Amino acid sequence: MAETVSIKDQVRILVQMQERDSKIYALLKEKEELPAEISRLQNIFEDKKTALKSLEEKEKALAVKRKEEELELASKEENIRKLNTQLLSLKTNKEYQAMLSQIGGLKTDCSVLEEEILKMMDGQDSLKAEAVGEKARLAEEENKFKEEKKKIDQRLKEIEWAINDLTAKRNQLIPSLDKHIFSSYERILKGRGGLALVKIKDYSCQGCYIAVTSQVVNEIKMQDKMIICESCARMLYLEEDL
Ligand SMILES: [Zn+2]
Image (cartoon, rainbow, N blue to C red):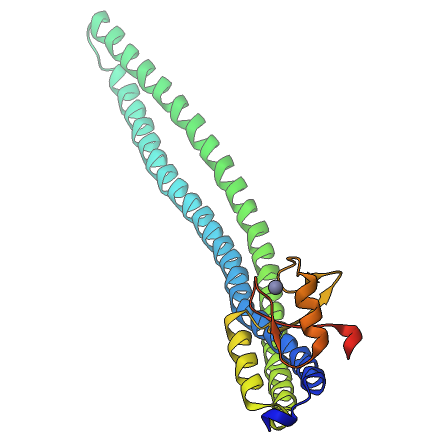
């Protein structure tokens, strides 16, 4: 077949093949990136879940601390009551004064505790309110994530179908290609990220955008073999020659 191969015909077929292969490579790239998009969305969702959990834990810790202080307050108040009854049975003024000051100290402690307890109650209220808001936002996020995942799964299926369809269509062209030209094309396609055949525009290779010499352009015009870009090693053609 080698002697009867028309380079012009081969290039015409390769142009069609490259069009399909470019689409296939773009789809493969998209397919590769989509799972990462799912994990990205999932991570955002999981982070929000963790944030809500920590909010709830903070509120719980505050409730425990408040309970402790309430017990302490109750025990101090009980003490004050006891001391107040003992006060009446004291014999000397000195003892009386000492106990009064003890009661005063306890009362001060109690008011400090009361203030702290009130602050903690406020803190718990605002944490609870925050958690309620977070929960609603989280439910919204979860729905969004599920919807997005469904869309992405659907897109993955479409990509799979499109790739199969395009692959079948590009493979139909193989029998019309010279064996050597096709194997070079395949090798370049795999080595050059899915772009094996590029046109020259304004004396510049459209694969690497480096200038080609007029000698290269003349060689292409002669159409007796496939010409390769000296910089990126892709197959070159001139659109106006086709
Ligand atoms: Zn090039």
